[in-house]
Length: 248
View 1 (cartoon, rainbow, N blue to C red):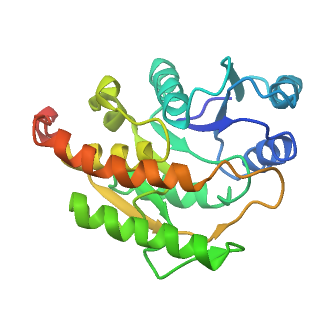
View 2: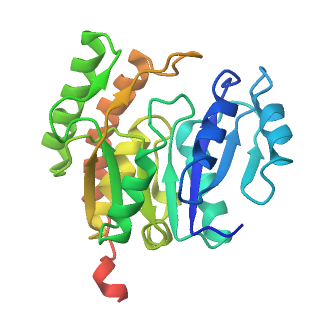
């Protein structure tokens, strides 16, 4: 079954969630294809996906990597795969239902209505986070405030990991120049897209903390993102970004 849209989901030990999220995506009214990038999950996540491939032939794909190689490298692996297979709209999404599959339609509609990048935003209309401890809500919210201050990005949810890119954005960004592999990767990709002159739009979503499986978030990841922002900004002073308008 043909589709113009590919959702990339990186996984590590998501056996409790992976079948449910796959079925939820394929139950949507719009046809999406799904690419799982599994970093050698010892809990058998990849085996579950491969078993489901028989049921969802031509729609469900998996790329297996050995060991935990980082969120950023997983997405870049997926981006290259998506471009090679001629998808027009490429999505980032978590496996744990913190991102509601129904909201994929909203991101798709935003990109087909003029956005180059659509961000599923927790903060564009206040704080829309469910089941997070207050400490983590504040840490995440003020991290985005800090990122906006340092980078000058007009984006409320700078660390969001629920996104849709138009193909042209990923064709334009030089992945070799994307330096971060943790959560700073999410900031760097948004910053780079904006520097290239692409239109970034925030779509309000409600983020629900995972109910099953173990979160990969830690204070160290946040520290890396906070320190990385300064490096991203400094690096940008020594780069020339080809403008999206130059290619039309």
